[in-house]
Length: 279
Image 1 (cartoon, rainbow, N blue to C red):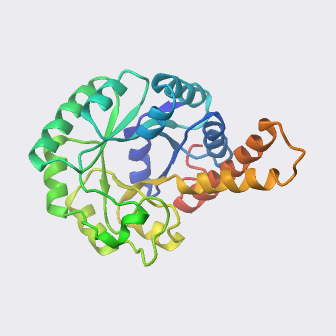
Image 2: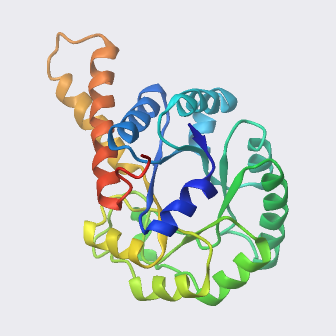
C-alpha cells in the first residue's frame, strides 16, 4: 500500500524504531525490496535517486515502483532520493512520488531556506512529504578531506523556517559503505534531537555496526538509508551464478540476485526494529 513519509515516520517516532530506506534502480531491486518488506512485515521506503532517473526514463521508473508499492501489503513510500536541483524536485512532484528529498547542501543558508520553504508549500498541497539535507555528506573516497557536522542550532532554525517533514543529519556518516575509523557522534545527535522535533534521517548507514545503528535510533533517527548492501548482495549473487559457464539466461542470475537483496531487506528491518511493525 502506498504511504507518505510522514505516515510511516510518525509511527516509528512514537514507537522507537526506524524505517529502512533502500535505493532501487531496476525491476529486480524493486521487487526485492517490496518482497523483503512483506516477509518482514515492515514498512519500507523505496527510493529512486537522481542518478537512476538519469539512467532510465524518469517517469517510467517511478511508475514501475508505484506499481509494486500499490500492491504491497505493507506501507510503502515511493521516495525521490537526493534531488539536487529545485527544478528536478518540482517536476518530480507530478510523477507519482509520495515523498521527495531536496539536497541544498551546496547553497547559501538563506537561499536554501527559501527553496525548501517553497517546495514544502507545493508538495504538502499535493499530500507529498519533504525531506531536506543542508550539510554535505562526503562519499567514502572523500573521507580524509574533513567532515562538516550538523549544528543543532542551525538545524533548529532551518526546520522551524521551512516546516520540512524530515531532516537529514551529518554526524560522522559517509556515503558508499563504512569508512575506516568511521564512527557516529551520538552525543551530537542527541543534541540535534533535543533541538529539533522533526523526524531525523541517517544517510550512509551501509556497513555501520549494529550497535551504532541502534544508538542512532535511540537518539531520534527514524529513517535509515541503505544502498551499498543491496549492490554488494546483487553483484556477489550474480558472480556466483556465472561461475557456471553454461548459464546464459539473465533471468536465472537476476532472480538469484533478487532473492539475495530481499534477504538483506529482512535482515536490516530486523536490526532497525521495523520488523513486524506493519501488522
